[in-house]
Image (cartoon, rainbow, N blue to C red; front, side, top):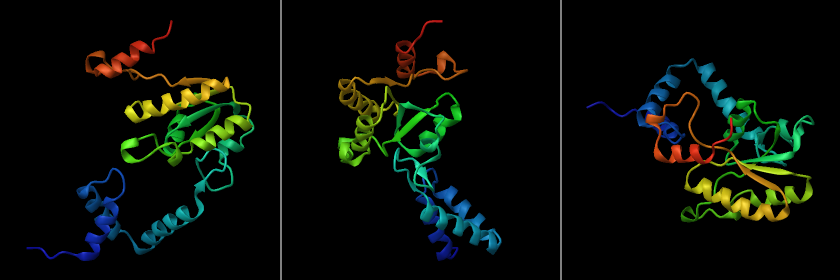
Length: 199
């Protein structure tokens, strides 16, 4: 029976805690790190330390930034009348890759999930409502995921924002470009039909 190499197992356990890494992937990554030159490992460790030390939340939208305000909030060319509400910082990156949106963002850092003890107080909702009172916002686009929690969060936000006279819209959901109808699930097809638009 092979002897356990404790430092390697410890590294694997730490890596396994990262999202998307199972036990085998974490072990493969641990072996790769052990095989790297020492100076590369030091550079990797330093990059992690610096990112953890210097990256924090934007004071305005709560996206990640190394400055007081993120690049998007600081950009005077963006449309400050529209705010897109997303769940997490990676969602901002996904929206930006689409190149189809030129407004601002607000990152909630989660969604409503009463079973997990996540209510409005645990999210950046109070800060969103403060922005809506202080800024001249005409539209809020809710871009939460289309799961139960995302839909509940969208409905909750709409219920509280609409009385202020601000337009609230939801991102359209349905079939992806190039998708085949026969492979789509019932929920996706229902969303695609309800979100249809004239051509």
